[in-house]
Structure formats: structure tokens, C-alpha cells
Length: 231
Image (cartoon, helix red, strand yellow):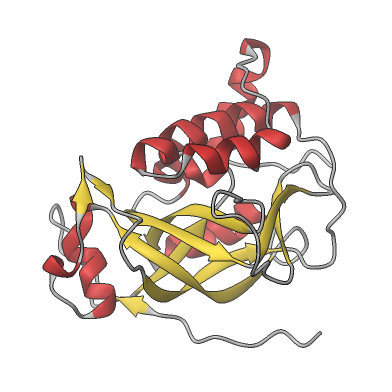
């Protein structure tokens, strides 16, 4: 199947703490351990959190290498409203060029994953409403929030986002032990930001048990800082 190409949607992000040049930022959709905002701050120090997004027609799995992947499949038009198994939710960040290059290394491009730009449904966070609105050149009042979380009952914006995906390796396997720890940290952050808990239970918990193994904690935190593939 020929993969359609998408142009990158880039937005200008001004830093409040330091002057920056007129470089552009990529909008990135993180669906695996980069749900963990601490990990993203370590790997991509200039990244900014924008909100949450949904990618329909994709199934979330742990793939051959023991990490998260998404598999494209036909959308189920007749599935029940509460069935999250045919969609993927994630957190959205901006990436400056250097951070995108760092992330490419952490994600193992082009072996473990390849880079694609795919249209996602996007709800901005209230804490970064100005940056999120800038992505669509619209006023902040376009969006509504409940307790600081995006209101996903409202119509989302459609935005092309950078997604790391492996279309060749789609066999479901158990996760790496240290990855379980990082995913659970990410799940906590994502639910706080508005990711549906039913999605976590129906989809992610089929692969990631709700447990914390202190024996792998230090390994997981090292992997969060500077990933090394164990395979």
C-alpha cells in the first residue's frame, strides 16, 4: 500500500525565558512512553506540551521490539460509542529542530520506526491555549475546557502531526519490563490531561499491567533520559 505524504504543519513558538531565532516547530503526536511528560522534558528540553489528540483507524499495540506501535486498519463504522479499540489517543508537543533530531535517535529512526505526518483530531490544553490556537490561526475562544482539561465532547481541530510508526513489524508481543514502568508514568500524566480512562482500560491495559517494579525503576529512568534499544 502506498503511504500518502503529508506536509509538516509548523508553528512559531516564542520562548519566555530566552530569545530564540525564527525557527519553526513540528507538531508531534506521542502515544507511547512519551506520554510521560518528565521523559519528554529530558529528551526534548525545548518541547512544549499543547494538548491531547486522537488518531482514528489505528490500533495501539506492543509490537515485535517490545515497545508501542500503532497499526492502521479499516475504521469500524458500526462499533459501539464506548469502544476505543480502533483509535489511538496521545499527547501533543511542539518540537524544535534539534529536539526532533534527538527524538529521531531515541525512536530508532529509520529501523525501529519511520516518520509520517498523519492528520489527527486535536484538543488543546488550557495551559497552552495560545500556542495551540496559533497552530490553527484561530482565537483561544474557539476551545472550551473543563477543570483545565480539553472538552473532548466538542468538535476537534484536524491537524497534521508527526507520528513515529512501524508498518512492517506488527506482531503483538509482551512489553519490555522497564517499558511497563515508563508507560505507567505516561498513563498517569495522560489521564490527568484528559485521555479517556476507558481507552486506557480497553486498549493500553491489554498490554501494560498496572504495576510498579522498583527493580526496573532506575533502568527505566535511564532509558527515559537516553534510550538504548535492548534488542
